[in-house]
Image (spheres, each protein chain N blue to C red):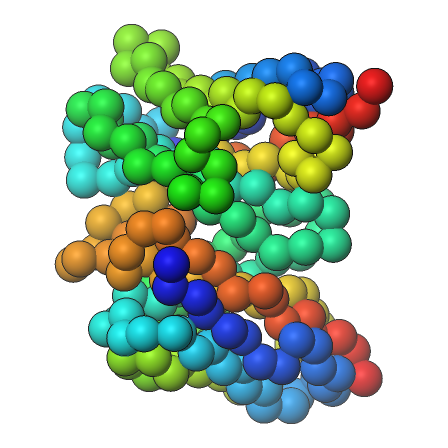
Length: 122
Length: 107
């Protein structure tokens, strides 16, 4: 059973860096045709894809966040991480990690973490 | 970016009703359209992938159709546990994008 779990501070001050880690269990982490991804949902709004990282380190970011986002992977720990710099109140959201599995030329998110609420406030 | 527009944004329905939610992409995305169910306080759950493939374990009352730019999620005989928000998502090209959601409420 594949499981993902987000961890990190629930409160971040404006202008600081938001850092979250996603720990993966029950899955082969370093191989397989899938991406490890981050998604967020501000309160009362829809889902926003933040970015993805392949097990070999290949990365894509949402252009809307690209200048502030870094996603990295630690295969030995079966973890991947999100850093978002210069945060504002607009970055307050529930952050999800998920695995994007390949299907033909597309992907789908079958496995998700339970979500981590991050509030940006002084 | 490819935008996906869902409609309606919300609907009220009764147990046993048939419900249809549509998703339209701003350009052709072939079949690379997924549907998720989202309940408050929980992670979204995959229902349909690649337009019409039912995820294992999802009840057969859920079905998906469409290709190109127009897609539909249909729920036959709505059940009490189906009241939730539904999102479509395109993975044809990055940035992967979601619709704004359709909230299904009890009438």
